[in-house]
Image (cartoon, rainbow, N blue to C red; front, side, top):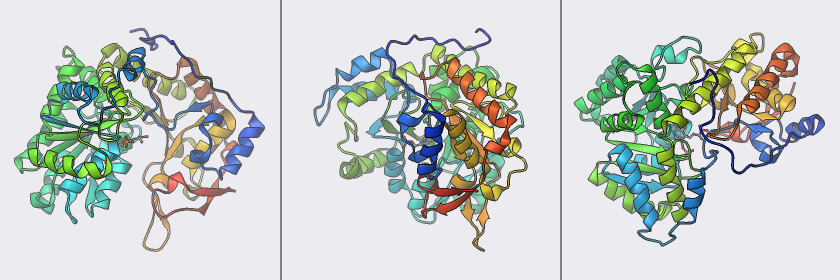
Length: 457
Ligand code: F0G
């Protein structure tokens, strides 16, 4: 590998993007009440809002769309989809759904009773929300290193297995319908989980008769990290590592919008006949019949092909190195980031960049506003607005970290886009007065980041 990542693909079709003028950006962000979710995507120059559903499909995937069989039941693309997902995960049943959160909803509403507790390294927002919606509690048990932006550790996504053991003792296995691991750990900075930690977690949970479910959205990136960083794994194929990872689990929820390299899609994998039967019946009301699960036949085909492509090790090497190289460009520009860089995004540490900026003026969110105004770039705050909560006295309680996530769509941006982003950050770091404090003018009761509005101070 050269010292910079070289794409193992070339560009056959392009999508025009444009940078709207500085005065238009000023106006647009103001009209959006300083909420970057409310800006039209066409008015964004480089969009790092998410890596989910934003991948560029390959020529093979596009060609696959034309082979879509749109029969209601038993379309041929379902069988390709099932065969591919089963060959990767080994699960007996593969149930298609339209995206990851639908998998969560279908599985959790079948397995959880009110008052239950679900441990994980870190639950993603929709995972947590779906658990809480069932009246249960979602517990984050990531290792201490995973909570610190700058501590070096190869697998900062690991769960603390001692705390997991205690958690089971205190709550009782009868109140834990399943335990989870998110691979890679999105809410914890896209950090990977080691094979050893996955195996140990499985032993602990299964030892207490508790099923083990993987949130597998970014499993391929996670398995690539295992190959790169874990002792004794470097000579194995990523696919072989993935088979071992899934063999320790009893089921998975999967958003194919990430490591399925598709724009929509997902699945539930399970070995449990009872769960399979209940979900198959329940999903007819909301997702659709068992063999399409809210997806068109052509989408099932795009996912089947995307799942295979995401295991290509040239692709994965480029993907992981692209994120690392983006992180290095930011470090060179004097921007503090969460290190080591994880799988799908670079997380900028807004507190370290703006140490004087009061928490109650939302430094991470303010930085994301400045990023748009200065460069037409969209990133997403993962801090006081996304995770802040009102305490009992009505005052805001802030999460420990104030980050801005720059999630990188797969196979979409090139080295020059990252250089441009790093130079925009450099300008902001050299003139921090462009980051202006914010005061909330409107907020809804739940998931406020999507609709919150601000006044600028
Ligand atoms: N689990 C994880 C770890 C995720 O990152 C996501 C989505 C989901 C589940 C839900 O999947 O979007 O297909 O319904 N993450 C996106 C993100 C939205 O931007 O990180 P979905």
